[in-house]
Amino acid sequence: MSAVVTHHAQLANAWTIVRLSLHVLGACVWVGGQLVLAGLVVTLRGISHDAPGKVARAFARFTWPAYGLLIATGVWNVAAMGSSATSSWNMVFGIKMFCVIVAGLGAFLHTRAASPKAKGVFAGVGMIGTLAALVLGVALTG
Image (cartoon, rainbow, N blue to C red; front, top):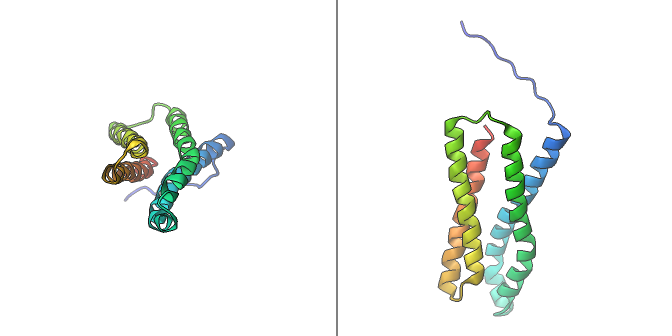
């Protein structure tokens, strides 16, 4: 005979709501924005040769602060956990942090690349890092 465990759903406290809402907002801008911009590149090229670069520079004014917000709230998320992490959680967290660095580095190098081929490679690296960090972040929620 097994014991029945019941879980009672409860609301998060105010600071948890603020912390997680800011983290999700940062992810919406960083991840969602990259996906939207990637989908608009062909259309922007049809408008003018300079349009993708102009839009990307304007977009950077939103995405880099969002990346910083993700880092800051990520640190806050870990601090709020205390010392309850398991070794497997810590391992996945380390991999996620590697992916976050790859995402930021790929995006940064994309902005500095001169050739279309290099821009594409670095955009792909950044996007893979971004999506991997997103999925691993969901896995870490337990």
